[in-house]
Length: 365
Ligand code: SAM
Ligand code: SF4
Ligand code: SF4
Image (cartoon, rainbow, N blue to C red; front, top):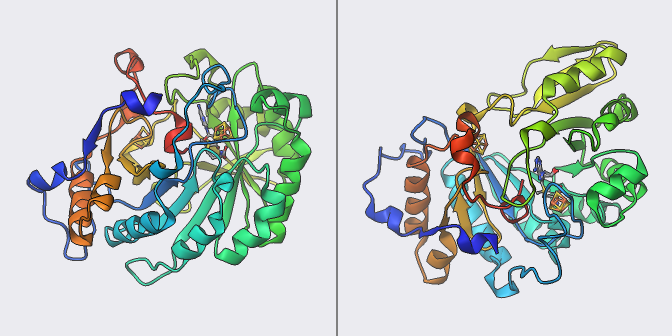
């Protein structure tokens, strides 16, 4: 299993390392490239009911694949405790992910617990979730009632045959479209829709996707296929650069660039000149955005990763389960963040291509 061959460091080791710089009086931290800690992505399960070819290819994630046993997963109480400690360091936004987060039993209970947390400024947390949308139609109301603010739905095409091929479990596109509609009805709006574009597989879906969601209030974001993990057979030739995505849409529906919503926003925003709303592109491969990356990732079993392409993580679960105090865990998180210098996408090169990296389904997108 991938995570077993990824080195894991006991997070307590961070306490023995002298702090790079003192924590700010208000607890906020910056890493070695002066990036604050703003976002936390929490993976709540490593399981998924899809086998998207670019994420959990069937040949690897087959019947013999050993997913984490339940006892290894962080409990909701453990997740909420860690989330509170991350917030002390400046986290304002939390995204639940996976695997498929809606498969985690009683996920609404975790959402309720997280929705009660307040940011350092006393505001409410920007609490969101990324899902494949397969069971969103029946979950949207209870998620919104539990305090979820927004939702991102992954959808790689409108053509049913293309979609079924990409999820590789023959799941129909209609059910995901119903999930998107249910999310909007439940107030989880605007719904963001993530489309991973793979050359020769769904590139012909770019314009139909844009056309379909134009004027709907939902925002489609086209993502460059990334070399995450070590099992998706990534090749640079399979990447459709974002500038090509924009060019294709602009030919039929003229676009103009707009300002980011906030510094460090990963999606580049474009709006239809006729007022039909906006689309986004995420150029993780062709235009790295590491300089503005303020994201930490907490894996399903409680390991802290500092980059989507990290080759090692820090074991926070051990601290939790061996009785560490809030102060000790908080200090470890602060020091670990202060030690961070990751900028994989900027450095992406032949030299890094052979590293064993963590699978997207384990660390969350
Ligand atoms: N199962 C949920 C879903 O699909 O939305 C959440 C987890 S999934 C790992 C999170 C996001 O990562 C999805 O939007 C997915 O499309 C994206 N993703 C997975 N593998 C990717 C890859 N190789 N390149 C780019 N995006 C990828
Ligand atoms: Fe599952 Fe999401 Fe990965 Fe697809 S992208 S296999 S839905 S975790
Ligand atoms: Fe952030 Fe790592 Fe992605 Fe760069 S490669 S944007 S540091 S997660």
